[in-house]
Image 1 (cartoon, rainbow, N blue to C red):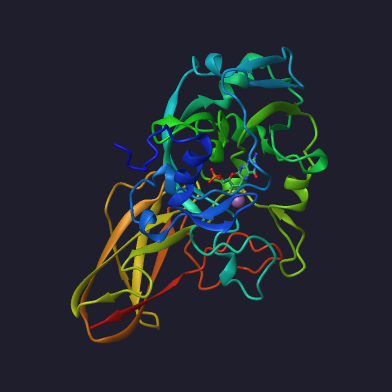
Image 2 (image 1 turned 45 degrees about the horizontal axis):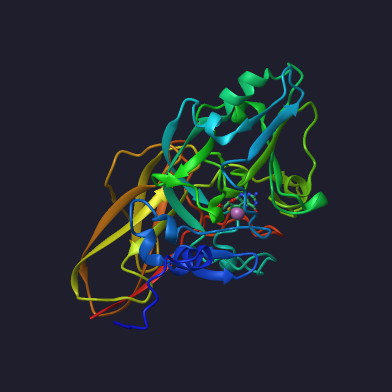
Length: 357
Ligand SMILES: Nc1nc2c(c(=O)[nH]1)N[C@H]1C(S)=C(S)[C@@H](COP(=O)(O)O)O[C@H]1N2
Ligand SMILES: [Mo]
């Protein structure tokens, strides 16, 4: 029977459209999109809903033939295929990734850059081989200070490349990741291999890894020195953007939601770079009446923790809810994050408006 329905296998482009259907598009080309609010309420962000931040069009690297060149200040340079890499020591980690520009749109005056609201954020299970294992095989020379990891996207001086201090590169949790949420990486998230730097803002987790190089001098490329720096903050010298600042998010009730009077359960997430979150507090309406929320799981480093708070006697009308996280180093979210020219690291307490009644 002729149904008019196309039963052919979806084309690669159709599949890409599907992959992107769950996202809030910020820019179609290069593709940049936020995780939708509802997906942020889940303990792990489904890959199809996980934000995408790409500075250039996405390269397409065939897993079967792609090789990473490992060289620079090493005794034994080599190239590494994906099958060989996957025979290394595989580790799985739950890691929260947040773009350094997340929350930029609520900084004033509005900085330049992609207009991220609060959805350049997600948590996934990542599987890969420690970068340290690859560096060990290359035998990094003793005068090495940084490890450069280069992507396959962007041209010339705008090729996406970032360096890590040797200590962070050698950390056992710093992975060359091949999988996300139990499946091979999708093209948008860096297939066939990306770096994963737990606890650091997303820019460190270089997608589409092409080349790894041991450096005897600090890297000064565009994405190291001109972007991803805290620039023009009260006349201080620029500082590199590294670890994710302590932050929290209310996931329920959703923005603008209407809820019944009485008991309202407020829920959300909280995270802080490589550190554990130790406390989340909630304030109903303005002022300083912060009350402790309950952490719903044992906090782990580098991943968000879910929390809940019971708002006992919500009365009809419009109310504001705020959440504020504190980490094991005693750092707490500020009311306003330090303004900087490129609008990075906005971990200010957020205001959620809800209607009761
Ligand atoms: N090669 C390459 N890697 C990259 C980027 C990029 O533009 N090119 N963007 C970085 C930034 S700024 C972020 S926030 C994360 C986003 O990862 P995702 O798209 O998988 O969410 O990738 C990082 N890795
Ligand atoms: Mo980012």
